Image 1 (tube, rainbow, N blue to C red):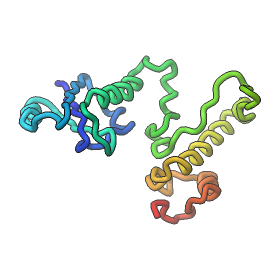
Image 2 (image 1 turned 60 degrees about the vertical axis):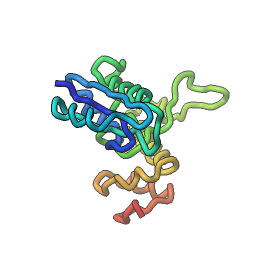
Image 3 (image 1 turned 90 degrees about the horizontal axis):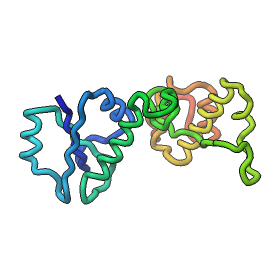
Image 4 (image 1 turned 180 degrees about the vertical axis):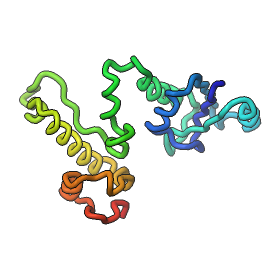
Length: 182
């Protein structure tokens, strides 16, 4: 049975976790409204036939749901097995379930190792996987503190190790049991 997804500003937020949930569905059906949306009677009728989710991309309004559906298809599709060259790479994405769930991904570097006199950080070329992972987490925490401090309030104290707390302290955020939402 398909699951009907209706993009609407009044729906529950579309998140990476919801994209991961939808990837396991055998069928997804999207219904796009225009201007004021879909007649409520149509949605009520659909609910008698299949699960219906009303989903929002954020606190804004579009003229129609087509663009919202494209965003959802992109987010869900890249989680399908075989879509990405390295299936493990989604674990390091912003908002990925697990260690990155409430963090933005840190800076990304590609080749060459020096571009316009700007080198890739030495640690990333070191081959020391543990140190590289630590550097990436530190940078993710710093970037989240700069760009989306609201996300840090979602982190539970048990999600943070001593180094995480030090990085947050350097970024000017409360640590050691203080409520980060304050």
